[in-house]
Image (spheres, rainbow, N blue to C red):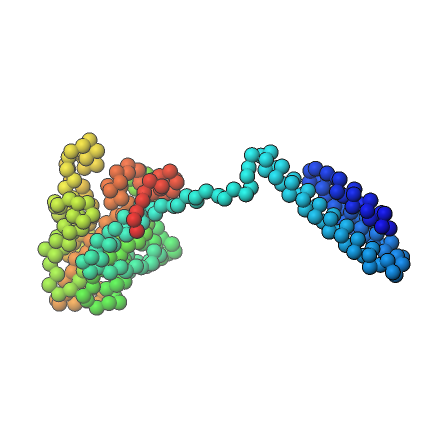
Length: 337
Ligand code: PHE
């Protein structure tokens, strides 16, 4: 038996199978269920008692040698494959690319930050709404075209719909709070519109609302001027008369952008002025509908589209860029916070 063991030791030492299959065959030949080692274990039973100790040790050693050899062969095999493919499997990986914040998020944060500095806190509401919060509570007459299927996505019947503007959050907040109310309300809104370079069926708005005693149109104008200066760095705004069912009087705010470059001509349509948002004094009917006494309180509201403002800020010509999430587009934006 000693001879057989020594012979096998020698054999194992010299063997040099290559390739995963040959190595596995090697392992099975010696360590398998019907392998050499198993046969020796059988023989061991008939070894004379006084030799059992020594033979046992030899057998153990043989087993250790074979196991070590198999490991060694496998490792060598892996190195060969990585050498063949030119890959170094032990190389530490490089830096992982860091993602960037989406431009809509960057602009939304900046808008909220600017208003936070003058005491506006953030409020949010649901995207799936009812008629009251989107239309009726905001003084929309029953025949108003915005209530049409053409403009609004209805989820179920005519009282479950996707909000078409964040003004719905105004109503929710007025119902639940007592003045003074000074909030900004960011959120996603939905309109039944075809997707194009200038319109999309889902986009983002930031709404603002300030209600207190003696709030005047001058307060509205000063607040918006402050915003324009902080955000655009432009010192001149103008308010053009406009109409919204929930504000009276209503206006649209333009920022004076200038006419220095060709792009300025294009984005201001040759006027030098850019339309930025809609605003007005909260209609007394709206206050009343939400349980606020219009004899005691007055307020102003405004609403702006985040995509529109981001397009101006970054000179982006096509709204669809924001929704396609092409990594080459997105990685151009960086923000410090
Ligand atoms: N909700 C209006 C819109 O979506 C914007 C607006 C908000 C106008 C608040 C006036 C006051 O166009």
